[in-house]
Amino acid sequence: MHFDLEQLLQAGGYIGLFGIIFAESGLLFGVFLPGDSLLFTAGLLASQGYFSLPMLAATCSIAAITGDAFGYLFGRRVGRALFERRDSRWFRREHLLVAEAFYEKHGGKAIVLARFLPIVRTFAPIIAGVAAMSYPRFALYNVLGGVLWGAGLTVTGYLLGSIVPDVDRYLLPLIAGIVLASILPTVLHVGKEHRLRLVAAVRARFARREPTLEADVD
Image (cartoon, rainbow, N blue to C red):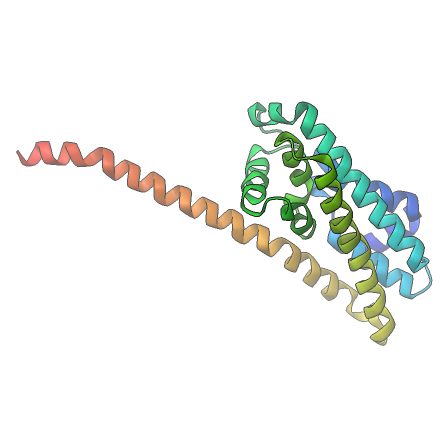
């Protein structure tokens, strides 16, 4: 098996994995990290003896939960200022707005659902903090989502690696499929938002032109 994620996991071990999952769950630059594929690959490696599955599942779950908790506290204290911040290499305001719309649509459940959506999962806890969501309520959804995502994907990878013979041969297609499946909902959501904005802009432009056209006819 020769894949960068594999080498990264074997080099970083549990501590490195904890840091990456924590960062993607609660730090702005974590939006670019490969959370889903990383968890899945770690599960595959556990099936081959590189990790202990119970230790791996616990590490990933705790990292996801504490990362989201940090994101919530960050949003509670300084998150509102992000809406006025300019885009940069590590931050795009559009990502924040997508997460805000997702949170408004799904409420507290967004904390759980966002775990399985790249980009959104990084900003969802921040939005919850900005919205002053009750922390006990947030903590409940946070723990549920953290365990479902952190332990769920690693166990899925472990089971697949245990069942499929010579899973090494299919690692690249499997990871590519996981990445595609994880980003597809976000891509579709963002595409829908852009389409709605484009339609609204076109309608507004034609609405402004109508009085001029009527004047020309007169």
